[in-house]
Image 1: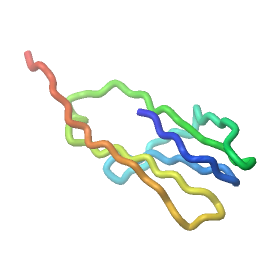
Image 2 (image 1 turned 30 degrees about the horizontal axis):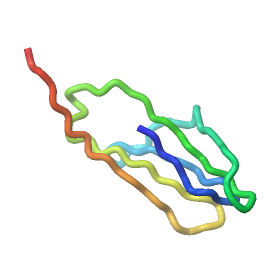
Image 3 (image 1 turned 135 degrees about the vertical axis):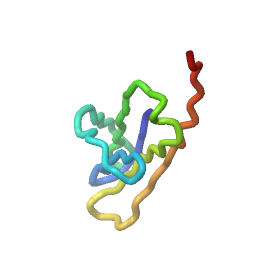
Length: 84
């Protein structure tokens, strides 16, 4: 899953959550130049889904030090698997 912010100055911080718990995702943040001297942040959360993850709510939240506004996007895992 990939989470990308809009251009901001200071750069935004991306935090991942599953069912309300923080996922350690501090490694792999990528910065690219944004408009008006801002920075675009992105992060790819990689994992191999398992049956236990069916119904799991995965949320990406972005915020920065100046704005009190937090933006989020979520995906509800709807996994189908062939049971043997």
